[in-house]
Structures are given as C-alpha cells and as structure tokens.
Length: 395
Image (cartoon, rainbow, N blue to C red):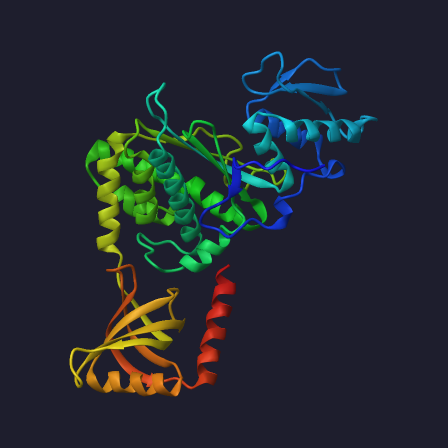
C-alpha cells in the first residue's frame, strides 16, 4: 500500500526532514487493535454498532451517509484480525477526514500529541498571517520545553539551543482545516521528556498567572522556574494568545507507551486569554532581568577580530569548543590579550579565556575576560571530550 501525499502532516519546521520510518504505513501485523481504537476515539471518531466481543465499527467526526467507516477487531484473538486491520488501515489512508491521517501517524511511531487551538470569531476566514502566528508560537513552546529539559533557568538565551533543537528532530506537525488548530506528534523515544516537561511547565505558568492577577505578586513565577517556566515559555504563550480571543493547549499520551510517572492519564487543556497577557509580559521581563551571569572558562577558536585603532583593546568573536552551551561569543580584550588572540588565530590554534557569560544579549557576550592563553590542540580536544562527557551525564 502507498500512502497518498498529504501536506496536513509534515516535519516540524524547527527540525530536519522526518526520518524514513515516518513515511511507511503501519504494518497490520504490528498494530494493536486496542491502540487503534484508542487513537480513533482520541481523534473524534464514534464507535457504532458491531459484533459484541468481536469487532466495532468506527465512523469519523461529522459522519454523513457517504463517509468512510472502519471495522476494528476487539483483539488479535479474533480470527480475521489481521485482514480487518489491513482493510481498516487502507480505509484510513484513503479517507478524506484529516483525523484519519493523524491516526495513521500515531500508529506509525508511538507519539505523544500536543495540540494548540486559537479562538477567533467564527465565520471569519483565518488569514495566512494568523496561521503562521500559530505555527511560530507552537515552535516556540516546543523549544521552551526542550530547553527546560536541558536545565532550569528563567532565561535560557542561546544556551543549549543546538541540543534542544536536536531533541525535536523527529517531531511531525498536522494542521487542522481552517488554520485554527495544530497538532504536534512528539516521538516517545526521543521527545517524551519534552512533553512531560511542558505538561508541568504549562500548568505552573497558568497557576502563576492566576496568582499574579489575584495578588499582584510575582513570587509564583519565581517558583515556577523549577517546573520549567522561563522567559522563552512566557514569550511563546504571549505569541500564541496575541490577536486572538484566547488559546488552549492540550497533551495526550501515546497509547503504546502509556502514562508517564507523575502525570495524570487525562487532564483538561490549559487555557490562556488576552487578560493574561500583562502578567505574562511582566514575568518575561522579570526573567530577563533576574537571570544572573555565569562564570565560565571557555575554549574557542577566533573567527573574527576588530578594533578601532592599530593598537589598543579590541573585540574578538569565538566559536565555542568547550565551556559553554552556546555556539559563538563576543569577548572584549585588552591590548595584550587581543595580541595573544591574534597570534593564536594566525597559528590556527584555539584560545582559552576566563570570564562571565552575560545574560544580556542572550548569553552571547563574555565580560571581565582574563587569563587569555593559547590552548594547544591536544588540550582543546580534551576540553571538547570533557564537555561531551558532561552532556552525556546530563542526558
């Protein structure tokens, strides 16, 4: 069987193209009919009459007389189970219902589902700009969850972004007709930690917002950092809600993998309204101001040098090899240190520098730089190895 081309399910925009395993249809021999029934129910299909204890007939949302229905056996003990499953998968692949594609995605790879809705006046067409706003906000929320998995911080800036982005590599996105809703399918094997973190963080953000609106205090947002709330998340929620009448976010666990520890099996969507925006913006500004600078010892290669005069202090741009989870930083150096960096650049070797990684500008600038020395290639490799070991331990 060949799956028809469908743009309603596509690789997530922050990730590379989906791996080939997503392209194939589910193998009927590997499909659990209980899981198929659970996914049909989740996506709004209705269970109709069927032979009790043998199979059930499912019809899609908004069922009309000509709509496709599927027969799903109750268990694999039913004699014709695999034939029925093959027919059901074929029917889903050819169904006009967008939810049928989402069911197939859920069967192809075990995935948790994150769904976003933006409430706009009914009867009005959703503009292309509004649809892009929904996509961009969803990307931001996923990235905020992935960053929170790497570490808790009120403001992440440029830190950990490469690894966070890599953890979203297999995410697929399905867009509902009308552009008012969007679903992300987050693979359990690579992304469950992100989904769990978002489950806790979104509820903590909702509770902190309620507390701020009721009391005017911001302390609840400070406490919420431990649960994954950050400037990145509050900014993402603001982007989701802005220009709408409200927005909702829901999470559903993969029927195959089951419910993760510490999370409820079912829960109501988290809702935010335009009235929440002032509190969320205040929290965002607070996180930006309060995140402290970080003392670091960085090893990096010089990729750019500049100064206003032939002599005196200058600024260098380093590609970071070790010491900080950012790709590049700018460092202001005194004349002697600048000369050391220049010699290292000409010799093709890295430098090592001690300083403070400033939160202003997204942790892309090193201040109070000192102890600038050339780092022999062997030592630079050792630093990179230490960083990799630390990252593995963190994971």
